[in-house]
Image 1 (cartoon, rainbow, N blue to C red):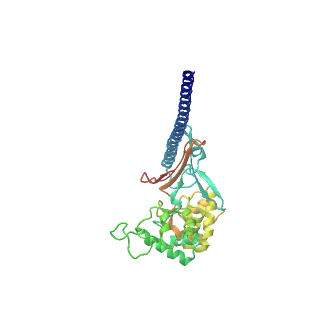
Image 2 (image 1 turned 90 degrees about the vertical axis):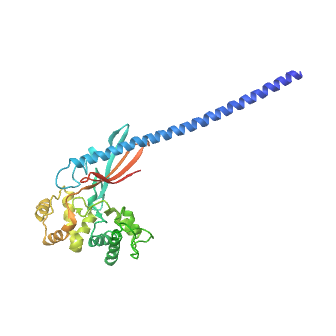
Image 3 (image 1 turned 135 degrees about the vertical axis):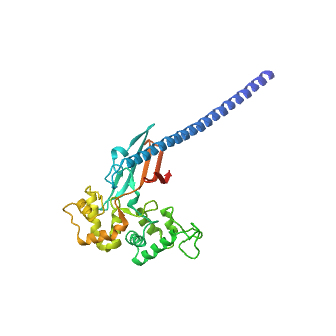
Length: 333
């Protein structure tokens, strides 16, 4: 009986060991499955991002191709590269991915609309090129500063963007243009660098930021500039009375007009017979000719891509120089 009891005890011990072994194996299997499942999901996500990135890049290339096909002597938001939903909205990028190139713009009535395509970077004020009087007017009208405050801040911005003589972007002691020590003078590389300029508050910057760039040019395209920029331009030399000129420009554009020349006759022809350029309008136009153009070389693309179901979501923003055939800015997120 003692031998039987010992054999039973031994068998029970073996059973317990077997059960614990099975339990541990099951737990290991579950942990392995969870790990492998997580890795597979991560691989799926990363694979989706790769495919979405390729689709977004295809959208950028598509926009560049549209810009290269455009051969007339002016640029406007009425053209195919700037607004063609069939070519730029929800486009099949392959492997289940779709891309859209889009941007929003301000309308004359204060509303916001969406175009599908690329936008013109030269519709904004380039803080690296703008003259002091243009910067002053911009800070006053869009930034909400008084005339004196705007002039002071514009002067500080001009000082900050000029490198030291024969020193590249070396620091210029004693200028006091920066709020943070050690920042170098020289052309702005990002509009956000304005936040470090002495006298620039975040509130003013946020009001001004939608209207400025560091990738524009010396002149602003009146076919693509927003309502606020047209008001700024009209006020540079025409005073507050220049607002009527800006209103006429916007009204003509929103009715499909494109300014193909800066001559008074050419602008009058675009405005049509119902809109007359008054002597005041002509004075405004003559005063701002050094600041404006109807052509552009630099364009911004903003492309989003994904499958719409969470697999891959990529945004690419770039600025492309058509004349030099190169990217001035590129960001992926």
